[in-house]
Length: 356
Image (cartoon, rainbow, N blue to C red):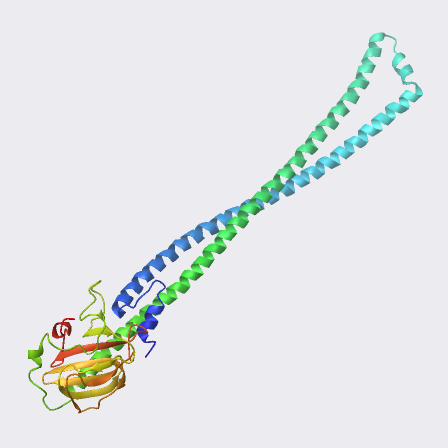
């Protein structure tokens, strides 16, 4: 299977550059989940703060709008009073003008004494001065009301800009949160797939063990043990996975053999004379050939084309199958999974093979 389940598991991890064991990926996915949840909690706290700030700004906007309306109302009242006072002053000036035309000088100079003349002049001047002062005060009040309206406009403009900035921050946080929620779903998918991969791998090993232990055949050569450290390699290539758990983390899925990378179609050869006891597609292992050598069995998994049949006797060097990528593998590369079992118990194949 060119795109195995493990490849799908690992393909969902943005930082993955090479395959990992299901347990390693599950451990990483759980760590990623905790990290994403922490980020979501931080974003939610920031969103809460931003929304509180937006509520505070909105309250200030409403308060300034109400203040502006009051300032506008006060300005309208002041304008009406100013208009009324202007009308009164206009009427007084008109009356004074008419009196002057009729002989204001005679009215003033009709006083018997000069002091009375001065008193009447001061009185008329005082009336005019008071009206002028009232007009100046009303003009100042009008200017103050106008300045209050302008200040309210500036405050509202500043609050509007601040509100837009905070709303933009809220939108950015919502977008970050949506991305984290999506990432959390992907991480949890990785967890599910890793668990499925681990379950399938465990089932595949159990299935293969059942096939090997339940198959009866004639005893093969009894000198397999004597070939310890001298067995030829089934294929030539780098070992990309060793026997046991991952040495890097100690948390990887347990390997019952070794993975040897080779080109597609490379012949897979028997390492010792024996009898082919299994030629079948085993879920997880893919196309598999097992050869029994007395109490020992060699297993060749993820093959492509099989060249032998069940029950066939083979010699060392006989082509059993070709390198492929069937079954549950860690990616798109081609490899051979090679196992040695003693009465069904997995052995580390590397010490059995000749040093390269």
